[in-house]
Length: 124
Image (cartoon, rainbow, N blue to C red; front, side, top):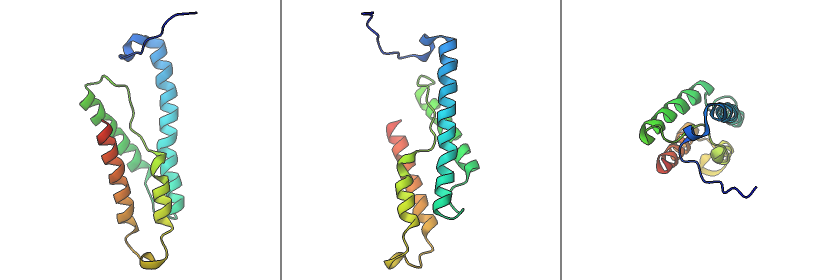
């Protein structure tokens, strides 16, 4: 019971069964988030928000780019983030003051998405 557990730096040390189990768990968690974020954003903008298909393809491209940068040493998936839903919600409710008749809501959403991309690149 007093075994000292060290950090695992290479996922291949776990063995195939544990890697498959963790991969399956990761797939359900990340796929659910990647689908749920565009659905929530679409409710903010009455169906004119993010496309699920575009979100999936960007998550895949981002993940492949991440694996290329880390030389396949970090098992990770870059999917949607719930962190920026507050920003989307705030932008969706901009209907007063100078934003009352604003047609630039899509530009504001793009700036939030670019902020997300910059944050992902920073942590890569």
